[in-house]
Image (cartoon, rainbow, N blue to C red; front, top):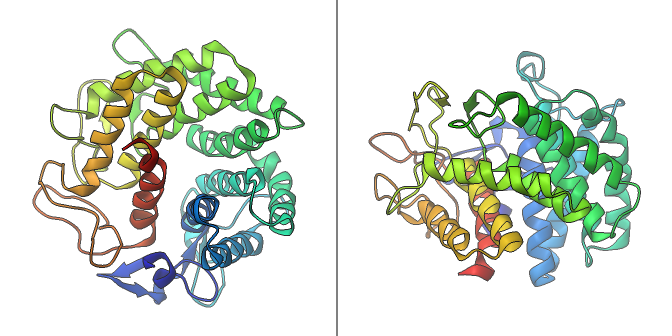
Length: 337
């Protein structure tokens, strides 16, 4: 219901002031691509007609934001026009997230065929964006979508792209990993779990043990950096965590525990090692108050999620990114509770 409240006739609104949607903030492809994943997964579970209308709306927004070269304009204002942020910021991840969302729709068994067909048209047009030299998270987001389609179809035209994208992630690991730094980059930053998660989904498609083994090593490394005896401690966005030992713990963003929950569950499903299911439950509990401040991030009254956790307080605003991050993690973990 809170998703519906954040969504107007055009798309999901970017920010909220408290629990009230801030219509002046406009929209992003980032948020609507993630919302498309949530709405599609929820529809698969419930066959709810109101959820299907959200799938159509978020998909239509992505279509309106796609450029002629296949990439996506990320920031759209309330008047449905691109903003200058698109020129000032790196918007590459928006294209990766869009491919993820579209791939989940295309792979769905129950989404109506006309919606799946339109999603695949957009997906195919976007493929050149990620077959170029994209950033690692853009690659990982896209790989999640493309591998989901390839897995659902038991092969097909997307398998070669899955291998190419997964191999490019492996190359980053080889270039940066060492005995005491099992990671793809010189620093841990945002949505870290997305990268090994993408490798696990690629493994399910092409059964390359190298993908699974690297995913396990890097998830084990993330566990050492973020999971403590009683709670999950995300990497903070004020400095991140570098290989020289400096790790920021604030501000903590909901996207990180969401990505980690999904990565741990993917590894559990692949290895059937019970510890990873338990780690996933502990990570998800960050949203429920098992965090350093012992404050719930999920708002039971509104159904939304607070935007972040600082050293002393919870951000009272409940915008699109945080709420969708919570809902995505919740949908994924419900069968394993």
